[in-house]
Image (cartoon, rainbow, N blue to C red; front, side, top):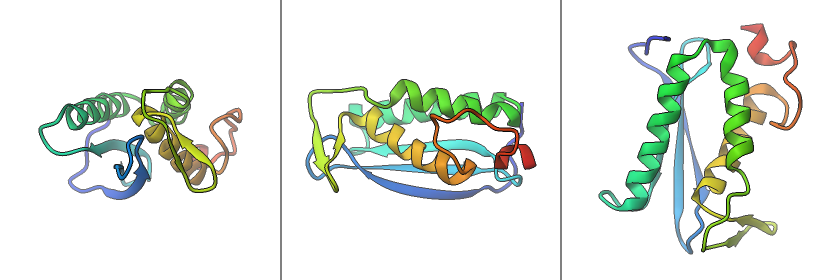
Length: 137
Protein backbone atom coordinates (compact mmCIF):
# COMPACT_ATOMS: atom_id res chain seq x y z
CA UNK A 1 0.00 0.00 0.00
CA UNK A 2 1.27 3.44 -0.91
CA UNK A 3 1.21 5.81 2.00
CA UNK A 4 -0.42 9.17 1.58
CA UNK A 5 2.22 11.90 1.90
CA UNK A 6 1.71 14.85 4.23
CA UNK A 7 0.67 16.98 1.24
CA UNK A 8 -0.31 16.22 -2.35
CA UNK A 9 -0.52 18.30 -5.50
CA UNK A 10 -3.90 18.39 -7.17
CA UNK A 11 -5.71 19.68 -10.21
CA UNK A 12 -9.46 20.08 -10.54
CA UNK A 13 -11.41 19.78 -13.78
CA UNK A 14 -14.90 21.12 -14.38
CA UNK A 15 -17.07 18.95 -16.63
CA UNK A 16 -20.66 19.50 -17.77
CA UNK A 17 -22.96 16.90 -16.25
CA UNK A 18 -25.90 15.15 -17.90
CA UNK A 19 -28.48 17.60 -16.52
CA UNK A 20 -28.92 21.11 -17.90
CA UNK A 21 -26.76 23.67 -16.03
CA UNK A 22 -25.08 20.88 -14.03
CA UNK A 23 -21.34 20.69 -13.55
CA UNK A 24 -19.26 17.88 -12.09
CA UNK A 25 -15.89 18.66 -10.51
CA UNK A 26 -13.15 16.02 -10.53
CA UNK A 27 -9.97 16.57 -8.51
CA UNK A 28 -6.89 14.44 -9.16
CA UNK A 29 -4.37 14.25 -6.30
CA UNK A 30 -0.85 13.06 -7.11
CA UNK A 31 2.01 11.98 -4.87
CA UNK A 32 5.58 13.30 -4.87
CA UNK A 33 6.35 11.14 -7.94
CA UNK A 34 3.39 12.64 -9.86
CA UNK A 35 1.51 9.33 -9.67
CA UNK A 36 -2.24 9.48 -9.14
CA UNK A 37 -3.06 8.76 -5.51
CA UNK A 38 -6.60 9.96 -4.94
CA UNK A 39 -9.67 11.31 -6.71
CA UNK A 40 -12.48 13.53 -5.47
CA UNK A 41 -15.73 13.87 -7.41
CA UNK A 42 -18.28 16.55 -6.55
CA UNK A 43 -21.74 16.54 -8.06
CA UNK A 44 -24.99 18.12 -6.95
CA UNK A 45 -25.77 19.67 -3.61
CA UNK A 46 -24.40 18.24 -0.38
CA UNK A 47 -26.69 15.62 1.09
CA UNK A 48 -28.27 14.57 -2.22
CA UNK A 49 -28.11 11.11 -3.75
CA UNK A 50 -26.02 12.48 -6.62
CA UNK A 51 -23.43 13.86 -4.21
CA UNK A 52 -23.35 10.64 -2.19
CA UNK A 53 -22.95 8.46 -5.31
CA UNK A 54 -20.12 10.66 -6.60
CA UNK A 55 -18.30 10.55 -3.26
CA UNK A 56 -18.74 6.77 -3.05
CA UNK A 57 -17.22 6.20 -6.51
CA UNK A 58 -14.33 8.55 -5.74
CA UNK A 59 -13.61 6.73 -2.47
CA UNK A 60 -13.58 3.34 -4.21
CA UNK A 61 -11.21 4.58 -6.92
CA UNK A 62 -8.95 6.29 -4.36
CA UNK A 63 -8.83 3.19 -2.16
CA UNK A 64 -7.88 1.05 -5.16
CA UNK A 65 -5.20 3.54 -6.26
CA UNK A 66 -3.63 3.55 -2.80
CA UNK A 67 -3.55 -0.27 -2.67
CA UNK A 68 -1.66 -0.76 -5.92
CA UNK A 69 1.92 -0.45 -7.01
CA UNK A 70 2.61 2.65 -9.11
CA UNK A 71 3.20 0.44 -12.16
CA UNK A 72 -0.43 -0.74 -11.99
CA UNK A 73 -1.98 2.73 -11.96
CA UNK A 74 -1.92 3.28 -15.73
CA UNK A 75 -3.66 0.00 -16.58
CA UNK A 76 -6.18 0.57 -13.77
CA UNK A 77 -7.06 3.99 -15.21
CA UNK A 78 -7.45 2.45 -18.66
CA UNK A 79 -9.90 -0.09 -17.26
CA UNK A 80 -11.91 2.54 -15.37
CA UNK A 81 -12.22 4.70 -18.49
CA UNK A 82 -13.09 1.82 -20.82
CA UNK A 83 -15.79 0.47 -18.52
CA UNK A 84 -17.35 3.86 -17.74
CA UNK A 85 -17.29 5.80 -20.99
CA UNK A 86 -20.53 5.38 -22.90
CA UNK A 87 -22.77 4.51 -19.94
CA UNK A 88 -26.09 6.12 -20.78
CA UNK A 89 -28.70 7.44 -18.37
CA UNK A 90 -32.05 9.16 -18.82
CA UNK A 91 -30.57 12.64 -19.35
CA UNK A 92 -28.36 13.22 -22.38
CA UNK A 93 -26.78 16.65 -22.78
CA UNK A 94 -25.08 18.11 -25.82
CA UNK A 95 -22.16 20.43 -25.04
CA UNK A 96 -19.48 22.12 -27.10
CA UNK A 97 -18.64 20.74 -30.49
CA UNK A 98 -21.47 18.22 -30.47
CA UNK A 99 -20.02 16.31 -27.52
CA UNK A 100 -22.68 14.25 -25.80
CA UNK A 101 -22.72 13.69 -22.05
CA UNK A 102 -24.66 10.46 -21.64
CA UNK A 103 -24.59 10.22 -17.83
CA UNK A 104 -22.55 11.22 -14.79
CA UNK A 105 -20.27 8.15 -15.17
CA UNK A 106 -19.75 9.04 -18.84
CA UNK A 107 -18.90 12.65 -17.90
CA UNK A 108 -16.40 11.55 -15.25
CA UNK A 109 -14.83 8.98 -17.61
CA UNK A 110 -14.33 11.69 -20.24
CA UNK A 111 -12.38 13.78 -17.73
CA UNK A 112 -10.36 10.70 -16.74
CA UNK A 113 -9.59 10.18 -20.45
CA UNK A 114 -8.31 13.76 -20.74
CA UNK A 115 -6.22 13.32 -17.59
CA UNK A 116 -4.87 10.03 -18.96
CA UNK A 117 -3.82 11.63 -22.27
CA UNK A 118 -2.16 14.54 -20.45
CA UNK A 119 -0.39 12.26 -17.96
CA UNK A 120 0.75 9.45 -20.27
CA UNK A 121 0.92 11.19 -23.66
CA UNK A 122 -1.39 8.69 -25.33
CA UNK A 123 -5.08 7.85 -25.44
CA UNK A 124 -6.55 5.23 -23.14
CA UNK A 125 -7.25 3.05 -26.19
CA UNK A 126 -3.58 2.69 -27.09
CA UNK A 127 -1.52 -0.18 -25.68
CA UNK A 128 0.60 0.76 -22.70
CA UNK A 129 4.14 1.41 -23.84
CA UNK A 130 7.30 0.98 -21.79
CA UNK A 131 8.39 4.42 -22.95
CA UNK A 132 5.35 6.09 -21.38
CA UNK A 133 5.84 8.76 -18.71
CA UNK A 134 4.94 6.24 -16.01
CA UNK A 135 7.82 3.94 -16.98
CA UNK A 136 10.26 6.84 -16.63
CA UNK A 137 9.52 7.24 -12.92
